[in-house]
Image 1 (tube, rainbow, N blue to C red):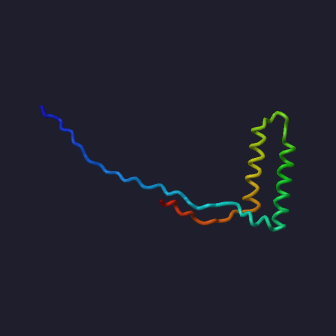
Image 2 (image 1 turned 60 degrees about the vertical axis):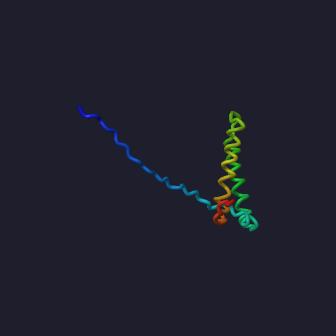
Image 3 (image 1 turned 60 degrees about the horizontal axis):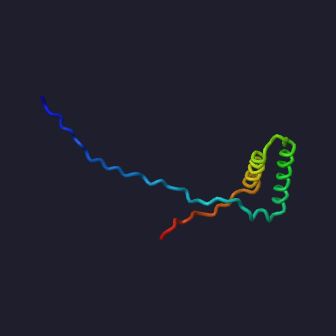
Length: 94
């Protein structure tokens, strides 16, 4: 009977480094200095919060109410004002 020889192979694996997008995007707050943009944002805020007020019921708890307000505020900025491209961040070098 033949003896079974186990064969081993050396395997080398190099993992690819995951690239993180270092692009910083933020809302362009300089546009709020323009009176036309200010009025558009104010109108949008009044419209959205009037709709929230109409939909509000007494059975909504504080957490759900805050989530609704937060989502409205977060969505108004990019839609009405827009983003500014602040460029790429350099990685921290020590």
